[in-house]
Length: 134
Image: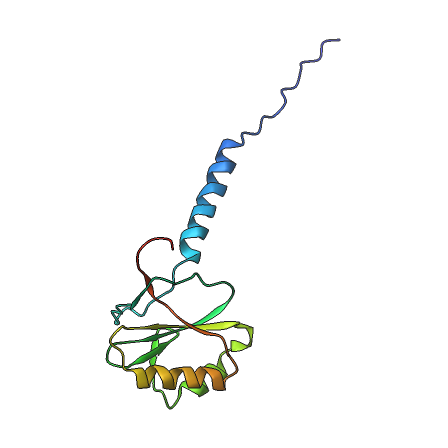
């Protein structure tokens, strides 16, 4: 009795590898970006000793005019603690302030005080890294 041979299905790995590679590239590029509010142009100060952030971070922006932005919305300093308390900030290990180089020191200190009052002690500043490796 004649039995035709069944062809074994072939699975090509090339399309799967292409898709995984594209997802990996997208994840790498999107993970390193911080969404800056569209209406604020911030010129970060320069520093030779800037380091990269590790872990979950609370991100706040301070414009040259002294406006504070949280969650891409301007927030009044008098209501900032309420806004931070309303959000689930317990999971944040640190806070980063993206402050314009010409922002007033008094505004930045008040912002740091509000961040500490909600329980985050580790506060860093985003800077533009100057020069090469030290």
